[in-house]
Length: 620
Image (cartoon, rainbow, N blue to C red):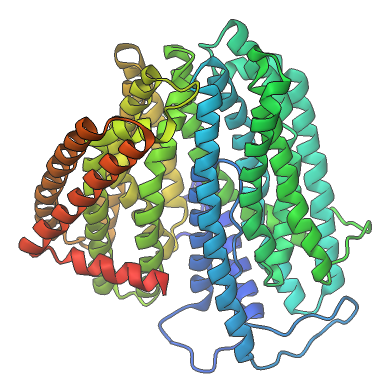
């Protein structure tokens, strides 16, 4: 195996290998400090690899949460055994004591609380989207806001909380566990000042140069829509500084096993935006109503920072002005940010590609694609993330033990489970996209014509639902094999195919063409992943996959037929007031789902019981 200094490697690959090795080494040291020696280690499992796996899992879940919420970052937990509470700075070593049962119970309660808080945040996020649609529809101002928000969100993913927090937590925790409080506090304080200065400079540049820079991201905008996009971006860019500081504050809290404050802050982020929109819109002239949304996002981000900052009082952390920009631990954090920065940056670039070409279609297209994407993400977050999260540690253990037979079998089973839940979800969206959009969005400024546009985007998004779910699982498999750079390169290929496909399809097909390009890119990425894993693992039971897919497609076709017919019958009978829509759509989806389960039982689809067991395991 080539080392980072192997002369056969090109400079870029050598740098990538060096960064990867630095990350693995850092995680190994952090894991050793955190867990301590194991009394009965499994000789086939490398603890550093387990640490990398857990950190990568947190990174992937964070990225998913970002795509869904668009604002609030879910905290990345430190996976570690219970430890004694730290009394305060000053001592250089603290003896480890045996874990106490009550600490394990506290961790379980924290996990339960976090799950409830996350669910509440997602509900609040959906309400936020409904309120925004009611006030702004998908008009030019809403599209201007969409692009104005996506650009700082991209930069945030590259430099602020999303990339910074997963890199900061293990190193800060390592120092605390060694009793090196002064060093840990100095490192955190240095990063706080460094992040504030760097993001402050970036923010100032984009605010001053917005008139030149922002039109590059939406070349189709002109006139009032372009002017609004520029002004809205100037309002929104300060969130960069706020989120950068938030990432470090939350990292400190996580290192002390304090997850509650930031678990609830996304809920209040959404709540603040809703309140500012409702009470702020009347304060602006009609053409500037959208300003209230931008101001609400900034206000919500301030609240999102204040809540965890207030909780810092309950930790021994003390901010210090004795900073050291040459601190090697600061350098380690920056090195560890590299793969996260690339992965999250590519995710956000894909969203910007959609908006870039959407602006060339018409002023409504970027907002229409964004609204459809929010609905598309719901089954993804509920089903595929759950399956990938539960299977991931098992895949990782088999990879570490070089048990490729078990790894291959588990991966193949996971792929079949994902298509078991996402193919029928796609079928339901394909036949009921318009009723779904009508129920969620159509009120106020969001009219029937806009429902048609967003439903078209959602229809085409549905084709990528199963492949996107498999993409997540296959990416995690590469992480388990300690090949984190492979998913990054594939993400780059995904971005390139999305851009080329959008360029070729946006003129003849408009919004449908742009979203179809995204679906094509995802299919290409999954094909590449599948071929690479089949080669590395000597097969992934593809014959079984196709056999299951055939039976699942039969069940999904029955689901689609039943769901549509039930919805259509009740829609005509009950009308389209809110209660009628809820009953007709709910009954259609419910009876369609029951029909799907019945067909799967009849055809003896084994994934039915497997998925039910996984859901029970994740909720336990």
